Image (cartoon, rainbow, N blue to C red):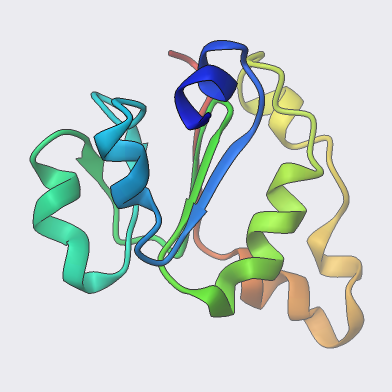
Length: 115
């Protein structure tokens, strides 16, 4: 299912150790991604590993921990559309969340929409 969703350009999100499922499905090959610390070597073997809490590569959103789930949801709500940084930055302003919570959730977030 993950492979079919990715091929169709649909959002695919994986949190904590779930990117290992995407590795087995061949979805992470050559992409930028993150995973829980215990899966780092597994991701590095096939993808460009990032230590960022949330990583966006086109339609693929990965996160290191369930605590970053809100960041994943905010990223999924943005219009990435494969149109580069400008399109990705037109989503909701995370700074508008109470107490700057959005900035704490989303920083740092890397986006790779140029592939």
